[in-house]
Image (cartoon, rainbow, N blue to C red):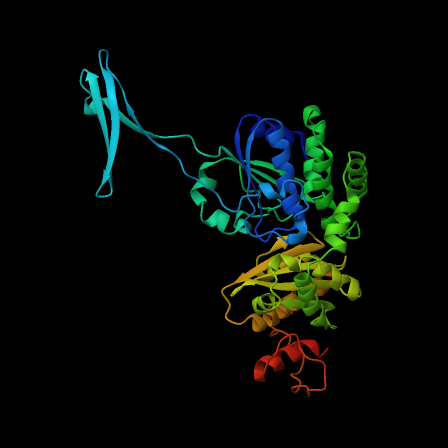
Length: 435
């Protein structure tokens, strides 16, 4: 599957027929989402559009090298003018206008030079909306935009939306769709769209090519992930021909990390756990960890790749990051044996690709216990998929399979668990890690 002529035509028409465009990636933005948003900003601005690009949260310091980074806005300013119109009858001339503000009221005073202004001559209206088109990139569902969406639902309801994505789990929100699940990144979708318009194709500068290549490199893990296709490699080669600065990307994303990032990576990698029975490897970073290391949640981006490199002999790798108290996100990668998108959907209504997916959990009281609960659900999902592959129907009457007999609390000389726990909490985690 690739972009259909109908979809690309509709998307082009949407851009051509609108002038004031808002571009938004998902919250907890990653390099592909931010690069795609900035690439749209550069292209649409180059063809004469008024463009605002929003980053819903603080992007990682490592992405400051991206062209246009300093043009990002943090929030949406939705203000619209309220217009009072006085229709002047023939023979009426205005001498002065003035206003007063008192008792939370604005009094607008119209002083005629000649003639009379009547109530029936006055009408009211609103000025133009600040945005007449919203472009959402790399986002499977509007809820993933976070507060940008929840705080401005009226804007998203009243304004046409162009949905540009590569996730198979995309719910196809919005009126216009540019979705290609065979693309390795949102920036790959953009590149092939830009290529179809001669005028746009000529506007792919080295800066724009660098943005597009950044998303492609990061979402394929430097072309190591299974989502890498021959077309992805061809796209990368063409972007290099157009001046994409590959070494600049590698330097900032893989060879240069702030001390805070190194510290939080060290904490996460020190906590690697593996459930051998289900072949699930995971680690977790809490809000307390981030605060202790003076790090931000986006700095955990890339840790999952390190988990895969450190313990490649697993079917599922998961990183749990607590972005704020009572709110975690889980990022997953899987081998060909497990459908990560299905696993995420069945666990907590998440989604993504067959080999890369994620989910979110909100409203829990204890991060450690929530991680334990999530691993248990993931294990059940993995076992369910394996039974189906072996054509073994599940026993509906059977109670859920226990993870393992609860072991005693390990003595202090044994390796520490991911979190400092006592009593039943530690027993539960030990239960998961015993196998």
